[in-house]
Length: 260
Image (cartoon, rainbow, N blue to C red; front, top):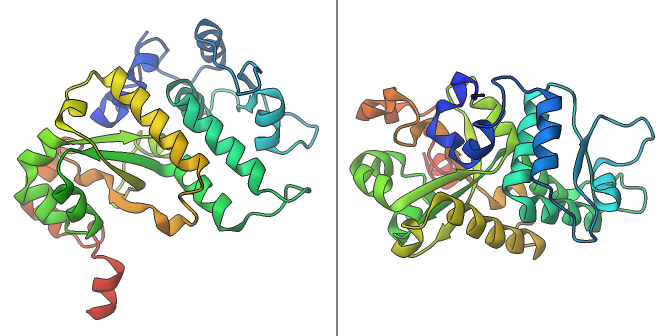
């Protein structure tokens, strides 16, 4: 079995273990078999299962919290990637679901900024890890050309880009100009960067789950926008420094726009 050709992008690395075990299309049967081989559980011991959409009206997040059931549409790329993220970042997905449930009113109808932030990251989140805080500062400052051109070698050696959001994985099947993720930024040691990918994913899952459970991110604006097609190696076009002159993709920060 092999993944779809579009999944060859380096940004699919966190899911590679699973993609290499699956057909090139999102087959529900193969996904169910994978979940049986590698079982995961909720905090209260429920086996996490990927089930078809249910007609009983139960709220999506409550179903996960109470029964361990993740509603998953048949042969659907979006839900397929969601399931693979569950297998990869189990602690974080459980933290997202628990945080949603805590933020709900008794009817489950209220959203509010906390649930909006959780949804933004669940759909489009990415974790950026670096051993060099100055690189993270350039990202925070929307200094795209300085980061990806002037410091390109350092980005390649001292930064890691780990996608969490399942909608972002789906979008990467057909990447488009302006594709942007919602980033959280972690500073780690050089030793961390030398760990295996599996160990890095476990570490990110543990730290990210703790951050989300603590309520650290209260609003969608608490995440850092990151234009994904600017990351070195993602598209061949970004080898040309002029690629980063495209202000539609590589926009200045909000403060810079206000002062222009």
